[in-house]
Amino acid sequence: MKRKSNVLLKIVPVLFAGMLALSGCSGSGEKASSSSSGSGKIVNLTMSAWGNPAELKVYQKGIDSYTKEHPNVKIKLIPVPTDGYEQKILTQLQGGDAPDVFYVGDATMAKLAQNGSVAELGEYMQTGDSYAKPDEYAAGLWGAAKQDGKYYGVPVDCNPLLLYYNKKMFKDLGIKTPQEYFDEGQWNWKAFDEVTKKLKDGGKKGFIAEKWLMDTWIWSNGGRAYDEKGNYVLDQNQKAREAIQFISDLTKKGQIMYAGSLPKGQGLDAMFMSNQVGMVAAGRWLTPMFSENKSLDFDYIYWPTNTGNKMEPVQIGVAFMAANKKSKHVKEAMNFATYYVSKEGQKARLEGNGNAIPSVSGIDEIVTSDKTVEHTQYLMDGREKGFVNGAPLMFKGQIPGLNKEVEDQYDLLLLGKQSVDKTIKNITEKTKQLTSEYQAGN
View 1 (cartoon, rainbow, N blue to C red):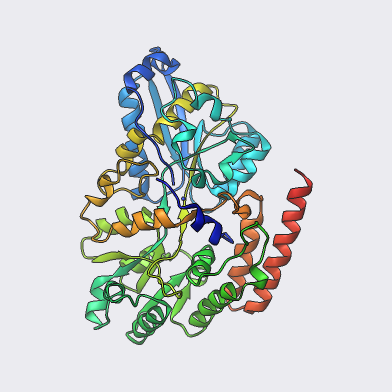
View 2 (tube, rainbow, N blue to C red):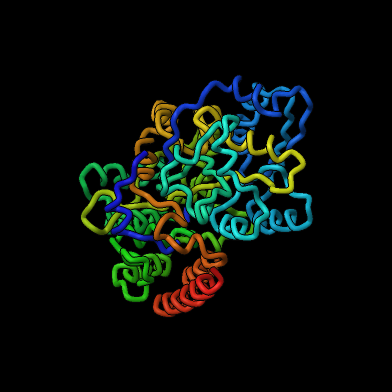
């Protein structure tokens, strides 16, 4: 997949989110025989990842596909709750009992790439044993996993951000659907305001906001946080401020509910499935779970804009697969990791009702041919137009701790504890402080 360079230079992120181009590999049997995983000796590996039960089933498909070709390798999937995942992995790595391979979020990737606790994969990926090569991935997908020409993680797949909406709820309340607005060329902020108000008036929640969505709202207004030269400009960019103000206003009016204010144990996914909220934001990761609820009639819609364009960039969620540098079976771990993210591995995981879309070219049909959701093309559109956190000129994802600081300030805004101006001021101060510290140490 090729990204247009002029788009990358025009809009640069404040924050999250994931494209790759991966061509076919040589026969897996050849790799198995040339690597130690094909020696016949039993090798036991462990893999950690976060995810809901439906997502874990998807991960297991990738494991099963690999072990079918490598019967001497046994891989145990160890799920870890999303909350506290980063800290658990960091603690395990420090204590010497981390899994052999594991998912890494973009914010954590910056830390692991710098502290030397994960294996550098670039050299291995150039060998004949690897199922994937670094040059098969688009530059915009690596994010913080690529540091100084070295590769410390490989993009697992990708998840462009879009909106899910409850088709039956809109119909029952007599509300024009987002798709109808889109077809008329009117799926914009005004329409989003109208829809969330009507949902609220109908006794429902219009939309659930999350603290990591700020960038996409800014981009949907043509705003930016960094200029073309990589200089931080959020505090000077009126379009960015308008976007933050828009969400703050809708939250105060009760048309948007903040996920951080939900009762403990109640998530946006459960609220959507129980017909309490009309729209939620996510990548494809909620699709397997939502699809299991046969009474739920939902569809995708692209993010609303305020620029006059039908589509603007969205955040792309990407997790990276990393290998424990101190694994007792580091070569086997790297072999499995490269298979898991290869065309063959992604097809095994994502075919049918998968939880993401390919980050490799040539297998999009495994998503577009799935009729579970009508408008799957919006996922592909998001992949083409969006950005991965930490990609070139997107410095925040490469500065350890900055994502969290930005999200913490946006959290206070959404909770109604500080103003838009105060939020931007605090984000600016934290960004300049951590950027300065990062640059001084490199």
